[in-house]
Length: 543
Ligand code: HEM
Ligand SMILES: *[C@@H]1O[C@H](CO)[C@@H](O)[C@H](O)[C@H]1NC(C)=O
Ligand SMILES: *[C@@H]1O[C@H](CO)[C@@H](O)[C@H](O)[C@H]1NC(C)=O
Image (cartoon, rainbow, N blue to C red):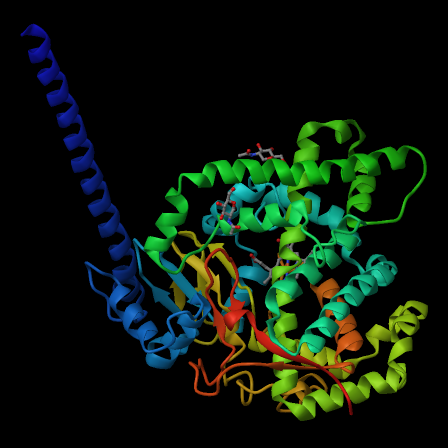
């Protein structure tokens, strides 16, 4: 009797507890809802800046659903600001748009006017938004160059900058060529089979093999074999997914396997990198081995800070940095490589002009190209047309933007009218893909026109100041931008004259801004992916 009464009393207390927690949760949610919606209402009310039609209950969610639903379902989120600009030209005429999809996403201020973008990246570099820090937390514990801030960031950026200079990358060119040869063998095999193959995965393997040569000075062989580091990195980043569906996002985050997989991958990656670090540390005591990003980092660090060298914290940060280079250096570059072949195949004149440029620098005998580059790597800097096509590809298929934290005392300002745009509570998104497709800055924005990059300043085609930012501008710009472009030029020279690589999309398939190979969201990937992983047919060139 006694026991059972006590039991009932206990479960009643527990029930009460749960009830209180739920009520408390609901109140908190309502308060937050009120705060966020009020933040947006203040923009027209206090600052006189018009915003999209706003519902107190749903914010801009209905508008976003409506705008997105008339386009292919798998388009990547970077298209949203462009679509809003198209749908609400007046509201977006200031070069920015406030978007309230809370609780599905952070309060967003998407900015696409280059003058306004420069205010939070170049004139004043606002801290990265917590979204990106949280996203990369399981990968690098907030220690890496991409998300670090303040002293922690500037110290490491100084350490790594020289490693990515041309002086340091050029000696890596023979190693890069060796990896491109492996890719070429894959293309030959694809040509022999005559089948349609997807280019995206193989491009990623190529670019990760290349970046490993530059960063670690060793071969991953991921193009031809299973590599433990590469598999663990891919698996790890698949759990950081930025799902475009709230339910998919929850399913990833609440998956019971997630913590175990994160923990295991974390160990696998460190165990792979540690011997490389130890080897460099040992070599340092004897004499210099070949210079890599890793060895340069260790050298410059020791000059500044000898005692902490064997510090386990130093090793952990170094591991985090190596991981971010391996990651940031491959997915972006691989996507651009896929789009390069797609653009070349879709524009025969551009392809032909590029091939003629390669002939003029390297001669007609393809078998000697590799040797000629090794003899004189600076030849890769004498390809203005190829560089221009790469720039256009980066403009048309921009893989990444930047997200910065807004703050109560930080306003964007329209230089002519003096109008002020509050950033308090906002994720300030530099949406360069929208800038890159803005008619105000790019005549015929949707067309690949390499001549934009070859005409003199003053020509109407010439790019305008700050309007081109695929690697972002200001102190937090991409540390690997020269490396990525050099690598892409080398791949172009080593492949476009030997192969015809035709992207395969049905002509009546879905399109975005008229483009069949638009940027899609793909489960487990962070940045936009070429649609269907870029299916291609490869042919050995006969004429
Ligand atoms: C086509 C290729 C690439 C593109 C389009 C690209 C784009 C970008 C962009 C837009 C940012 C700024 C991100 C932000 O503000 O949050 C960035 C930063 C960064 N990128 Fe790249 N990237 C490319 C290749 C590479 C390569 C090859 C590496 C090096 C191994 C690299 C390493 C980094 C790092 C470490 C940062 C953070 C820099 C800092 O905050 O100081 N990226 N990249
Ligand atoms: C990552 O690894 C886990 C097991 O550790 C597996 O269940 C999952 O499918 C893998 N994900 C990917 C994208 O490979
Ligand atoms: C992951 O590994 C790093 C060292 O590379 C370590 O500092 C960190 O605590 C580990 N994190 C988890 C969650 O296991």
